[in-house]
Each structure stands twice: as structure tokens, then as C-alpha cells.
Image 1 (cartoon, rainbow, N blue to C red):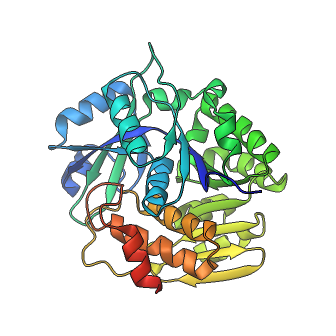
Image 2 (tube, rainbow, N blue to C red; image 1 turned 90 degrees about the horizontal axis):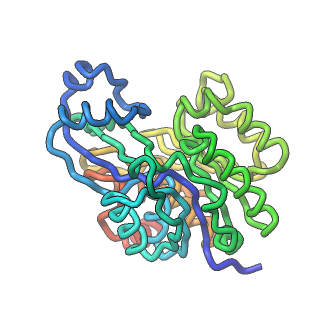
Length: 330
């Protein structure tokens, strides 16, 4: 059955504040370089006051993936909770301007729209500090069942699994997607998500609720307990029909019902900011698969998109992804 949308995603609706920082600043603030840490409102205010001049751009892992897919001419939808405030208006404007269907009503009288304070060190590594605000309170009532049903795939952001309200909403979304004949994808997002919820994720895989998992070196080893990431990916691939594992500068690989493909990373003149690398990789891969491309071609599209986004500040593409992909594949 033909679907209107290639992917409908559920994720954190976040506005990123990105600033340059030194390694000394990261150490002084007792931050884990390259990691994502959840912070409360007080810590968000404190860190924002101490960090350097920032640039505000719409973000959120799944939203970044959808933005990348929209840049590749894929019709997509997004479900995520913002507040009725200025940053909420910024997020809604930005994602709708891309042609993405976003109809989640803003929340009033509660926490403000989520923001992520991203510190980028001279080596391009990003250290994220996230105040989830309204994003973590996505209720089941905010789900657009018709939108989910119109999607060929439901894409779930692992970060959002950490909050009880949004976790319940995502479980309900899986049921809606299954009833509508849609496939379901899950991105594991971070080690702390895996460590907190891997048993739930395995249960979803084992009962057939998850068709595709996106992961990276650290997440896949945490998920399986296998030290070697390639062996860990092979082990996890036995639990799910389709698996994509990114290996940083070593490229990425995919498994699909016994088929296996691997590609190297695309060359980048200078790594400026790794924010959004995994998100845009997923965008390219999903776009390729939705177009009926092979695993290798889809992985290559993911690598091209990831290379573009790490060549500049911010988690959203700035260059013409369609042209970059066409030049690489043709």
C-alpha cells in the first residue's frame, strides 16, 4: 500500500545553542567530552551564562534526521512537544519551512521549550548539555494517528524513551504504526539510554515491534556486552531484521535479513562540528532505502550527508544534499 510519507518521526523538539569552547573549559565544568548530559533548568542557566557567544539553530536528533530527508526530497512528518514560547515558535517555523508536516500543539503553562547547550572544541568534538523542558512531556493525546498511519516508517528517537510520558506515547505510536502496516525504526541515541532501557529494547525486538535499529560503536557494545563493535553489531543484527551501525571515521555497515554491506567514511577537508553526524547519516540511509536503493548505496548516501554536516557548525545541512549524493552515486 502506497504511503504519503516516507518517514514519520517522534523525537525531542529542541533548539540548539552552539558555541566554541576549549578543552580546559570542558574540564573546568566537569563535563564528559563528546557525551550528552541531561541537565536541569538551574544548570542550564548557569552553563549558558558561562559559555561563549552562541548561535541558535533548531535541533533534536530525530528532527535533524527528518530535516536531512526533506533536503533529499522525501515527504516526512514529525511529532514532538514544544512549549508556547519563543523557542517553540522558532522550532515550529524551522521544521515547517522544510515542508515537514508538524502539527503537534504547543504546551501551555508548563516547562519551556527544550534547549541543548552544545560546546564544540577545536577538534570538532561536540559536548551536549540538554535541558529537555517540554519535550519530555509528549502525551499520548498529542499523537497524530492519521499522520503515523500515512507513514511507511515510524522512526523513534531513543533519547525520548527516557521520560515516562513520552515513552508511553511512543509505545502507543508503535501500536498505531503496526496496525497501519508501517515499519518501525529505533535509534539508540546514547549509552545512558541503552544502559537504562536495553532490556525493553530487546523485548521490542523479540516481539517483532522493531524492524530497524540505528546504533554506533559505543551504543552497540553497551547493548550487547561485546567489546568489539563489529562483533557486537553482528550479534545485535541477529535480533532485528535490519541494523545500521556507524563506526565514526571507519565508516558504517548494515545488515538486512542476512545481507551485509560496509562502506568507508566520506572524506572531509576539516571536521568543524560533529553535531548531527549520526542524525544526518540516518537521513541519507533512510532516503536511500525509501528510494529502493541497495544497502551499499544507502550507506553511501548516509556517509555523504554525515560528511556535509560535520564540515560546518550546526546539526542541519547547509549544502545541496541532492547534488552531493548525485555527484557521488552517478
